[in-house]
Length: 494
Image (cartoon, rainbow, N blue to C red; front, side, top):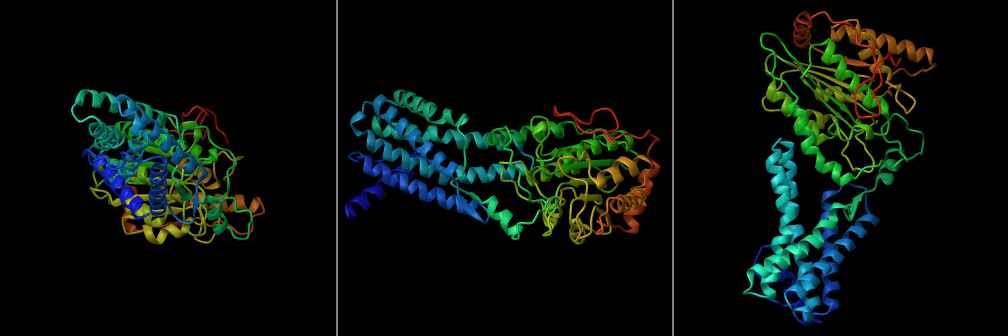
């Protein structure tokens, strides 16, 4: 038993050596299938540790994650067999496979895991080129590890070793273009929903209803496409117009299971672009199956990138940022960010405040949160140079969302009606609030949403100065976005 453990430890060291591009010493040369399965057990334990450290509670063991682990193991075995054959060492195939699987474990922990964290940080900072190259390096590292193993098998034939490593890499790496990668441990969303709604009551509008439809897209491909989508969106931003305050808009549609939120941000983009002189100064982030190829996802990471990009083009002392967030909301004051089956982080007041810490710093801000219980965002986001508008009190739901709705009550009242009649944001809020109260009364709703506005004389003076500089523009009628990933269609939609 002790001898087996000692050999297993030596094989692990050989795997680490291969991951660090050093030639293994061949401790597994006489090993059989038992050593390979021992390395598989180690690999599974390491993936469990990584999964627990990178996922949020409540957690679950993912059946698809087990399939991912087994697929990786089989592809590693195939790569090892090819190396053994091409290097004329077929007799020690199991030993090569044990070393290769140990190397797979070492590469995932020592190379790819840290690089993936760095790629995420670079992407958040807008360094897309560097992030792309680092991601490619992490995925190609397996080729270098295979070359190190080939050098062990036949030390003096470098070109043959490189060819063997390239073939083994192609066979074991290319299938991942079609195999969905799922972690072994992930958050248990059914348990999370049960925690949020322990009584099992209908919580439509609170941000945690279940969507039974699985969307037709490849989650991994979609996430890998985000840097390019963000880069393309940022490239459309135009320089500010000198000599007057400029309005810059970031619109965020969090829930991808209902078109109402996409309709709202697409319409907000058209309204502010056409009527409020913000053309070329808008970024739209949205979760919706119709716009996966045309709009960046509404995620916390993309929100950071978008706000940083806008801040870089603004005059931080003169221009105004309008952030419009629409989705469901929870009693715990989280905005739902969802696009099943992607495990996206929910948006808290602290998340938005952190995203607004841009460089350069943006002074003047109008922050609109259209979600149930959104009044809970005010204390965190409001300051002397920020106006915070919410569609509901901290303890109240808002209305008008759902699969049968084209726009929320608040979106209709504030965007489609009030801001088509006035260019004053405070006046538009007052008008919208009155309209919503009347609609809720007419619908027999006894507990009104009571939209909230937190303001200051400083931000109101700034908005008044900006409003006076706007040219006269015709109203922009609301229309829902079409199903092809485009913006609003023609027609009223009301």
